[in-house]
Length: 168
Ligand code: ATP
Ligand code: MG
Image (tube, rainbow, N blue to C red):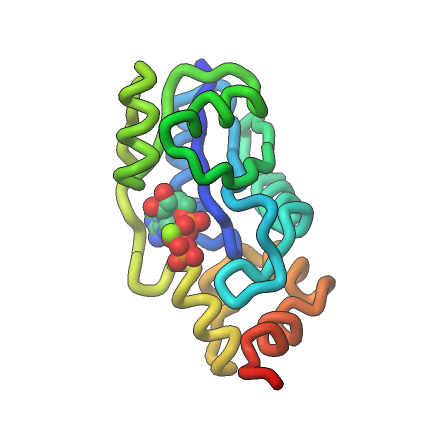
């Protein structure tokens, strides 16, 4: 079977990795959607789609799972969003999501919805990790080692700090 899982992955963290490791036990293939793919260089969305692809594919190297990583741009039209996703992805029959809107749109379109539990949500959270990146607190322990390396490689902390500055 082939399933779908979508996130913004700003950045990809250990909560995402744990979810995907669990999904890997249930499915043959996974289509991973990168949401808001067009966004980067903002406080809420510091990393490009390409950088997020690097984070994900390097973090999943040791996992026994065949997967596709597909960038999905925002279209701001919920009523046709599932068709938009379908136009960009390999076909799939199950959707793993905790997001109420994503779940609603896919179930209205006839997909089988699977719920995945939240792991250590206080810390394994993109919002919390970006906050720690800005404040100089330890964020590295909340992401896979591969993500630490990608963030270093692209100067991610400096970028996040600069685009978060109150400017001119
Ligand atoms: P942000 O705070 O930037 O929204 P996030 O941690 O919620 O980041 P997303 O990319 O928005 O990360 O999440 C993608 C999907 O992963 C969502 O469906 C979300 O519910 C799920 N998810 C996020 N964190 C966890 C976690 N700790 N455990 C399980 N699932 C998670
Ligand atoms: Mg989120």
